[in-house]
Image 1 (cartoon, helix red, strand yellow):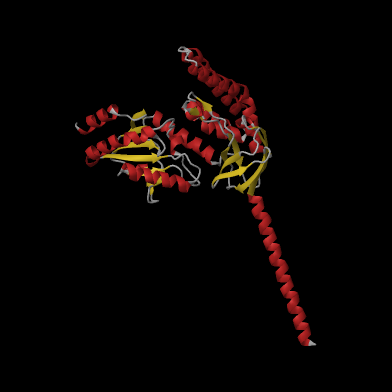
Image 2: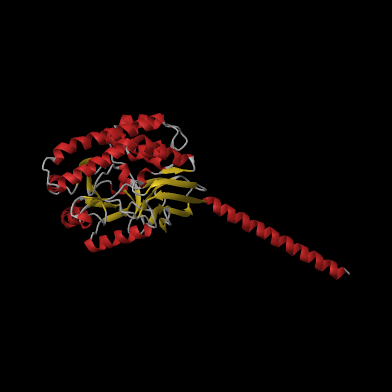
Length: 399
């Protein structure tokens, strides 16, 4: 009898353990599900073409069925703004048909966050103006798009008019349409500033302020930033604005360029400040950038001539890919192929804490910035500096 009772207790204990384990596994499953985002969409004209989302860990591609699609992925600890595109051809061809030059379409901005359940509706050809609903983060982006929609439509119309005029051989097209496009860009900038000012609690305001810092003076940027609520000021986008304001203040006062730390080709962290005491050329480039690669042979000549005299080059690469592994591969292959023997760092690392391109307001590639021994900016060029840099270095190292 005693043996039977012990066996009964044993079975009961085992059963309780199994139930407890099952509950833990189920809780873990639902917890994991809660961390993921889900996006369901329906786009007119999408058909069965692909949908491409730049996820937090690389691109995610799904095939739509009769215009409908669904995808899911993991989200980070803070809101992450990414983009979605479609396999439907939305390019603006600039002459020569589909084999000629073209202007790529504007993607759709989406905010990914833990547990988000999002719905996208609109048309494939106007994907960048689609509605994204499901949370306050994306609601603010949809409101932002609606506010500037008439101006974006006008811009698209002017771009199409410019292309058609060029194809038809109208010589005065640039003079006729160019001023209208310039006014349109000014109106878009004004519209964005207005939205940011009138919506201080919106996540879209923080994000788009971080994307348009070049449209503000230092004082205007600081004022616009401080007028926003503190709700999202712990995000990378807000921190980027704060860092930019401090960098601009330093630059305005003639102080040193802002410091940054990035991984080199061996994964070792490199800081700009460790080059103090030398003249440093910051070379913003990428493996995809033809003019950047074309400028490398001359940079190699300058480095060979002046490196022993106190001249250093610090390459800052930004690769146009989603995943870090692919970015590193393309970057390292370009460094090896071009024979770049100076320090190079990458601006594509996962969970990037400092966007150096944004920090230095880089608007095109290559951008080259020359710093003196104290780290102050003494020269800046959009495009390869060429003779201007030659003359500058010659005057420095021959005196």
